[in-house]
Amino acid sequence: MNDALPLAAELPFSLVLFGASGNLAKLKLYPALAALATGSRLPEDFAIIGYARTDMDDASFRTLVRESLEASGMNMDPHAMESFLSHVHYQQGDYDKRDGFDALAKRLDEMEKDWKNPVRMAYLSIPPTAFVHVIENMCMSGVRRGEFRCIVEKPVGHDLKSYEEIRSALTRCFGGEKEVFLLDHYLGKEAVRNIYYLRYANPVLERLFKNTLIHHVEIAASETMGIEGRAGYFEAAGTLRDFIQNHILLMASLLTMELREKEEGFRESRAAALAEFYLPAATSLNDVVLQGQYGPGMVNGEPEIGYTEENGVAEGSRTNTFIALKLRTRNPHFDGVPFYIRMGKRLKRRDTRITIQFQEHFRVGAGGSPNRLEIILQGEAGMKFHLQTKVGGTEPLFRPLLIEDPLTVTGDVLSEHGLLLLEAMRGKQQWFLSFEEVHTAWSLIDPLQAHLEKPETPLIRYPAGSEVPHEAVEWIAKDGVHWYQ
Ligand code: BG6
Image 1 (cartoon, rainbow, N blue to C red):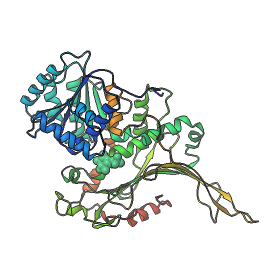
Image 2: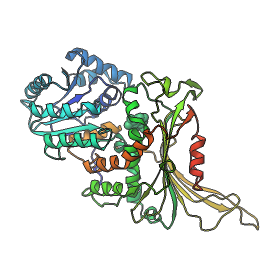
Image 3: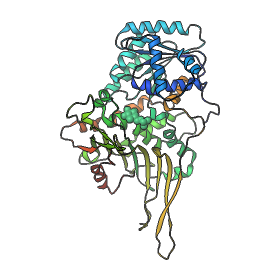
Image 4: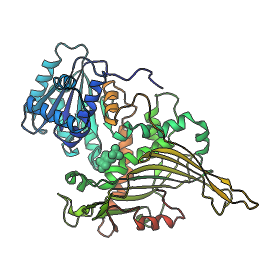
């Protein structure tokens, strides 16, 4: 399953970046592309064409890209910087008008005319509301031509209906899924991929992943960040749609999917695992999902404003920035095992972890705690296996016995977007979402979102910088469970 050689794109390509002056492009995409170029992973012939509404020429766009690279702390030498920028171009245009796309198509034809077997790519780093226009215009103009790859950033739509509209525009334009690369950057994280590979490479762990042995599973993500100036997007999204619908559900799928010896069938297996998740039966959805929103507080010793004071957030907004959720799966290995999920912004620390708590055979008593396996993906990353051992004396008293590894990633390491861009350039779809996965995820999320939007559904408030809000602690304690942090 491993490529021994560093991954590189072989065929010449042009990559059109829609949303070229946006935050994602500046913070992640230009640094990722420049790192690929300086790491000799790109072919000699390639072009990056920024497309956005802002009026700019090539020179001012190159300045924008240069400034993003400098701000990223990459420390490129001047020669490498100039060489990278010489591949960068700009096309001004609207997303919903043909002219810009016609001009773009002409430029692409011109740039690629002497290249051998060029691949043409588009990256949609734009609000989901602009997706359909861009897709249709790419197809009606000559932008979509030859071997094509269209990368679409999550979230794909904001509910099942809007997703289906995007999917049907994609299918009309690209004739199916082969040219479509639905990107969730969590699938580019080594630590997230490792959820699967820890199981793949360690049959002994896999043997433990059984409903007869597991008490419950927790998947939890905490961020210290707020919405980072993205009110325009976040107000209409909230944490359930922004994070649970994609990143968290993916982690749950990687943890429970059927292992595949080879790449074939991998995405199908991941999609099948996702389809097995369902909401547990409850008298009220309030027992299944809990939402919260941060108020003012202190994070890392710094005062932070509350969500409703953020620029662009409506007064009295009820958008959630914290979610706790219970899920179950029909997967035969995990059938009956409760999954507890939580994600919150502006909490005390950054931490993403999966905790698998095993059943207790006997109550060990003083000094003991249930066996558990923690896979910590972000924060103080690592894997920890919590066991216990007897302390001296005639009584069976115990102390913790911890087996741990920092899970340091070594080898051919790339940023999430770098790795995913490279895989898309090579036409590899394994770590991109399938249509089916996005469909399933929205089907699970829609009823929850509808419930959360009801004015009578509670919204807890927690001060910025909190540990897990106490209401969420009490909520899960009713099941005899507590959050690991
Ligand atoms: C993005 C969400 O997809 O992921 C953000 O839109 C979130 O709200 C971010 O903060 C988290 O990504 P990471 O890589 O910092 O864990």
